[in-house]
Image (spheres, one colour):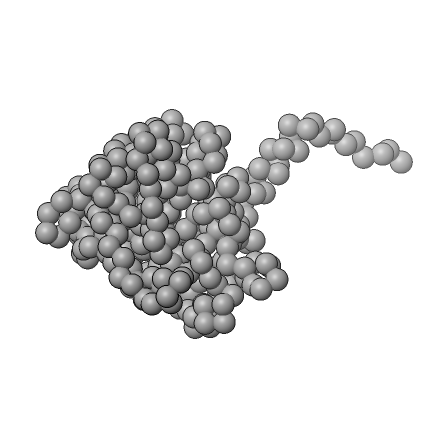
Length: 305
């Protein structure tokens, strides 16, 4: 009896088969997000060098090529801090936000709407996309009102209102410009600089800015890329899924604290505005966006209504 003839499979063929299997598994996820709007907040701390930025750009281009309508909102806190230090301008913070005087807001606008915005646009275009760099001022996309925060003096334990200077919070969002861009193979990249309702310029927290954009667009997903895996429990283990009620309970018992509080508050705001789900995830993980949207495993913490 003759033995069956087997054709040896090369390493290249095995890799091609694996690639095909990965694409086939991603198909249901691609169908789920077909023609959907996904807002991705790319945090300054998540911008982990040129290699990480290029990987992020590839993810965004692949999403657009898959029929998704991605909108990128970026931060730039570390880069702003570095430029201010270089120019000898001292920064102060209150309630997690940079106190922004006249000199500082000019640097903020230059760094955010200038160098960082155009770097991200360049990486996306190099990856084969067609990115357009904008900020909240363009087309009166985002108009902001002055933001104030109440902090407790550590000595007297008395609450005080802190004047944050030219720091704003979104007051209105006009999606006219974005409506003209989305669905036309164009990828908007937005810097969180907004026009003041009463004239001038406001620096807006990038998380807050992204939440306002996602809510106004009725996005299917808002992804907040940061430098932590997501929301952690008291044992520092990742909580993969939470509801708004569970988030509020975790804030009340102190599990969610510090800088994570404003992030989850942005998540709640976006969900209440109609966003289907918000994810907090580690942007330094290679292809974090694709892992979250196009695999069964997901990444980070998904918060839903």
